[in-house]
Image 1 (cartoon, rainbow over the protein chains, first blue to last red):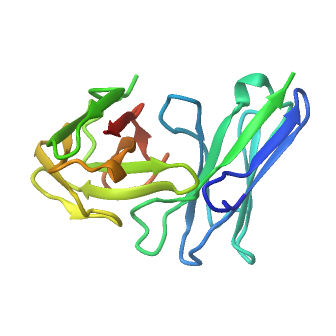
Image 2: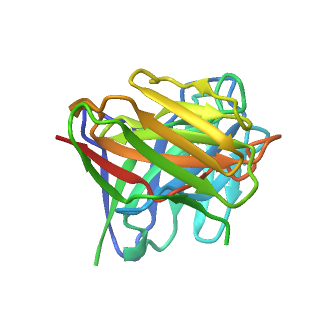
Image 3: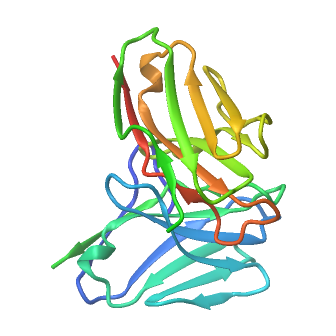
Length: 112
Length: 114
């Protein structure tokens, strides 16, 4: 899920399939992580969060996995729907713990 | 429903103009933030404020200033707009004392400087 130049990575999935979106975070001191969803023309919306004392957290149709060893975060979306099409990006609380640092994002496209 | 409201969805301004972007939140949050969002670069922090009349520079403050005279309102000011400030601007807020549920964002203002 890391960006290259000005182009966001894109994940295309078939409706009904599961999606996995990845994020490599930068700061080993981060202990709080969030996934946001941003639909076209809208501001980012909170999806799910996880603290560093956990390695997995589940919500409704979404699961976040945290691997602190390799500083990797993933978002799994079950039974992906057309309404899931959006840009997804992760955020970490960084060195000072009180401000979020955002990744560049991944575009999710759901094919019907 | 809690809200962060940005006054304009779209703005077109001329080079050299002074531009005001307004943001109001109704959640009594102490912290407010201004980001700009550009393709492939993610959200970059311009300025933030932890309290009324307090402001701190973010990662890219050059060419911007802010004002927070009231707790609910955080204004971003482009003193003399330039074409490289064409971008999506996002305001966010959060309560003091922690990042539970992260930030609440506004819908954004897409600014074009011509």
